[in-house]
Length: 449
Ligand SMILES: *Cc1c(COP(=O)(O)O)cnc(C)c1O
Image (cartoon, rainbow, N blue to C red; front, side, top):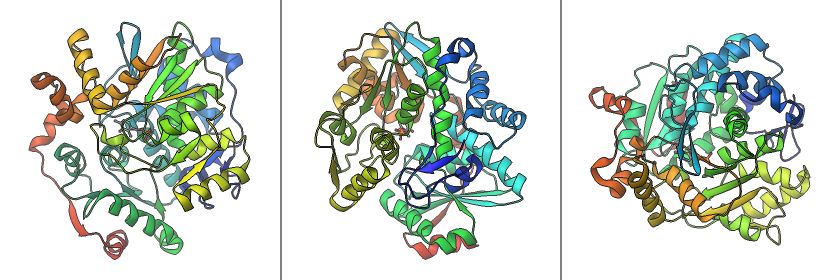
């Protein structure tokens, strides 16, 4: 399998090169040159456990790592999950909750990042190279990336986050990791400052090459690829082709569901669930993609206005017409808005926005009826499922364990908000962080040092 950029300027990239490239060098995102078709093999895939399915499907996208090596990396990636099937399930009457939060940091990002960490480690030792990973986080991504690469001899990881502006729990998930290759960098500024610093450093091609900088954000193709597996897995276990409801921020997770559908897994519909940051819900209703003000909500991992992976969807919507795609993205970059002219002619997506009251209401209603606690992101999905009519089984992607978002859960159900031993254990551990001014030379110095 070869990879190409959504913007048409990069082609013929191997999987391993795509892994190290992250963002394509023409500013686009990498996508596979063709989408593998599993529709004639569904009976052979049905009944496989999650890891066995991963071992059958991932080689369709990865042909430059020997299969037994890849199998080993898959085994290692999922060894740290605390559920025997990696992915958990909970039935709440007509709705199945697909629990994606059984990894080391209790959020779905572990499913992809644990594999990404193994892939990086293998490729770097194979080539005798080293990598410095630079990332910015407002919450979940930082700890998931750190857990994925901690202790790896050929990787240093630097995570920028706004000092005093992430939750104390999320900060501890990063700063208590003792491994020498982990660098938590608290920036005196906002999350936007952190992202701007990261972009400035990456934009300096000379510095990037001199220090072998790599990225782990969701523009990395391998993250999307790893997420396809659980949609395929859950679709094959359902009694009929299901509708997936996916709480969405960067459009990464739901885009993986879209690819699973394109690959021929039995999927009926995809429901994009957003919080008050409803740019995607507005797009699917009107065809207009228009940036608004960022709202700070109970589901902070979805407080995003510009969904980086949305470009990959548009590429397929435009049937690979990279000129149309470039025109649309240029329009958006210049005016903060771009439009198809009318609602997209699309037969798989439905999108809906959910507000604060509906989110709290969903947490409360589910707890009262089933004694089960949703985290606020999953609650957005659950509330969205209730507001959309579907004539198929419904599966809601549960993206985090509720103990990660105690404040929101407590406002819904008070003292019934659950904890988690992994998080409790962090209380007593020493923390390590470097505080810097929001200044690009401070970041460069850290990386060079
Ligand atoms: C990152 C995250 C999301 C959003 O996922 P995208 O792939 O950006 O759409 C939703 N819920 C939680 C808990 C997350 O950490």
